[in-house]
Image 1 (cartoon, rainbow, N blue to C red):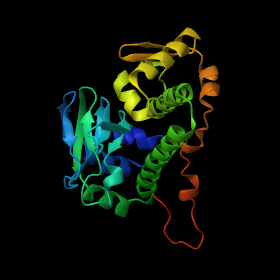
Image 2 (cartoon, helix red, strand yellow):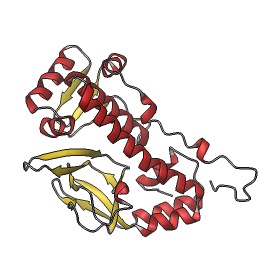
Image 3 (tube, one colour):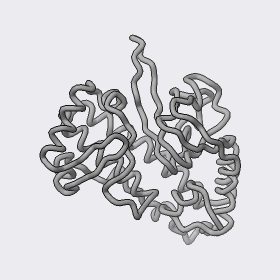
Image 4 (cartoon, rainbow, N blue to C red):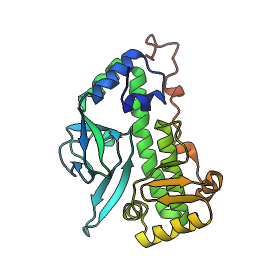
Length: 253
């Protein structure tokens, strides 16, 4: 049986039963193609649906008081888009496709129904939302305290590890469709600065950027350059699924 990207994503976090896989497969029954630059929703629109991103990249952004676009989040294949908005009545950002892709829209109630049926799925949704918040916290910290070179090295490692989570067999040459303008907006830099720092990292043999792909040539050195700490990106759900001897209900999965 072929499973969707959300099943593959969650299967890397927890052991899923066939019943739990069927619950998640329901989230992706209505796949549709989307084009580059297509908006999935706009800021302050009612939060009626979420999306799973089956293929392609997307990004969330806000328009500043000065009318400038500020990228705040990147979505890659396997991500659930809109999970952070779950408890709000309106969307907190605009979301737009960075590339052509495929998305599956589903109503918020699907998450509530899944959580009612499975403790393991509840833990996976909670952990995913928590990781999204941790990514944002780490990025804010980097914006305030890191050099331009370190920001870029850190972001490349982060994106590589995120993609590796949903594609464990991926090598160190991977799709990277972000242009310098989007990277600059996300990292609080200028496009010129991004270009210069990528050039430095390339000349020093750490990365190679070619249009829509990026190759990490010296992972260990780039990792040290970024002063990376994987604590915020490596999810561990084992403590959430431990059975309390006083609890008569054992977790599913």
